[in-house]
Image 1: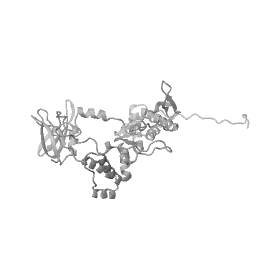
Image 2: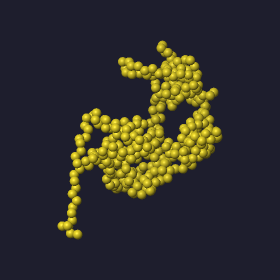
Image 3: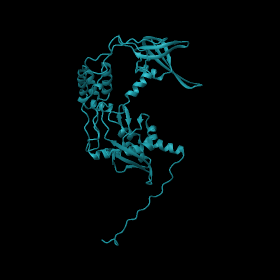
Image 4: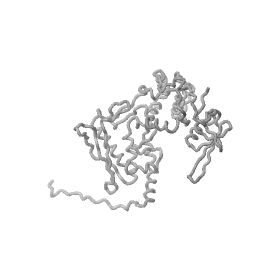
Length: 386
């Protein structure tokens, strides 16, 4: 057929849309509506790493769609350093409104220096299409995050606005930061940072033995796929990852590292109780009847601390917890009361109150300082069986 006889299709311009809301009230109403509509799909597709929830690209795209926008990515390209070495892939994400206008861009990068928790390269030895695809996925998530992060906050305060595709397999390494914070504020049990004293007895081992690991694996294997999924959610094992058709299998339960094996029977019992709450009722009841043998784990010997000047201690049964709020010239306040064996102690520290709530009706040791208006609670911990 000749060109003269060809009929060109006419491209009609998109119809004009009503003006977008501009007032702060209208914008916030729209964001709130989108948060309610998209909350279910965002939470359903979110991934849990080290106890924190991160949003995957599907969740970000749903938020964009609900705003009348659509996200995409341009071609991913190889990235080189100044010496000409191929170091990864980079892609540009683009967010367009309903008129097709670009309203935001973002960048996604996949580097060959990325490693899993065992130090093995994540992308260096993978096929090129897989690395480019991940760069585009990260670009889309990053672009949407830059525009719609406030919507995530309206959905659920427990959601992180960091895109899930940017989080390392084992999560971010916050152990050093958390350790420093604990040394400055309080111990994990909410007790006071007391004066250092050379221990008279060797401390309990910080890491389990191989024998304990094998016994622990036996307990986990009794719980089958539930235990495996639990380990994936906690970040103890690498879950299946990668694009469909080229997915890397997850780590088997036998590769569980020693640092994820509980050292004491109390720690093991707490983990198993949480895990058994996920099991079918019949299976959980059967496992409860069979306590199993968790090995020679024992509670560490309690070291008697040296108290600071003016600080006293007492052991008793935690009977009651009260709470009273008010307002002063300095702002709002909440004072908590802790009753131990008929004696009341008070504190404004909400963390101490939360720790105490877990030990209600148990024997506890309290650290306090007598004052003119009563005893000020400074720390609390569950008393040892001895």
